[in-house]
Length: 413
Image (tube, rainbow, N blue to C red; front, side, top):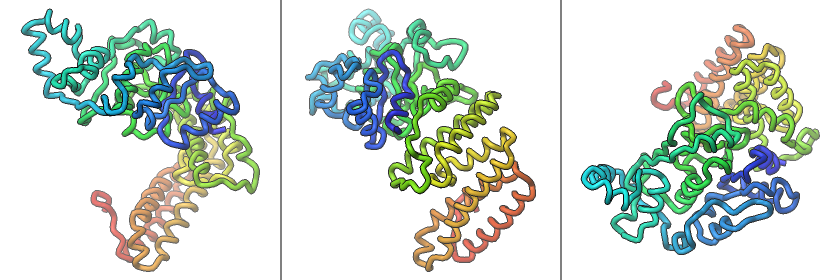
């Protein structure tokens, strides 16, 4: 069901591509396509494997009802030992600009009209046979935007106007590896008509700085031409996410009492509850109170506390905040108390350990102390009395922690 939820998050049209990275966000999707026949129009593309030539071979072929991926490189350009990585050399940018000033006609002939356009970077630098130009001569590349294609794409319009170009920052990158280059190649070629997604569970280190252009649509982030990481920018499509959660997501038999959930599956349960809580908070921010309540109720029923613990990591505190912000004080209090109980039990356990083991657990203690402070802040939304009660307990626990020689990190003392 988790695999289906990832696949069903994707847009229905355009043969979408979803970039994954690890076992748990790849194999369930493959299973659903291979065995259950779910969303065979979508292409699952694992970024770890994308660094290999044999996998790129597979991605360049059609699969199921999905088209081949938009990769124009020939096999000699990506076979093992070729373009395994390309250095990023931003200090060359000034030399390139001087070349355009001195002899624009020759410069355009050599490097294209815009030397820092992504397609030109790929053609004239990355795929160059000349070792002196087999680099990326900038830390900022651009993609000229086909605005009509963006309008047809079905993506959320983040702002009133569509930018003329997408800016991709490579700052901090010393080199791009083959999987990075393949990702950029697809971005350069898809022209927004084929949706590109990154699974929510893919770590930031695996998708360069494309997170600056993400819009979340449920369990995936869609790559858009808009800059969405600046204050006030829209980066969450609540309507698509709401529709997916309420009508397309499946939660299997998760609400069966006494169900055993292994550690790996439990993490996926946490991911889903956090998503539902986040969606509720986003809906509240947009003034869509009833839809937020619907999401909160969905989470309460489909991901019940008797099977999936209500704690900070599972989104319990955000759920509490959502209930309280929608006026459901009794339900909010129930969640606050559950998250507090979990955190205080962990901290009391660490405080009961022998000296050596306690000292080894200081980071865990600090984590629980910080979680409990966050709970105190939310408890104030229930009542001043509950906040004061929790704050008093927290102060006592901190005194015990400090008395045993526990230290807080710098800046938190």
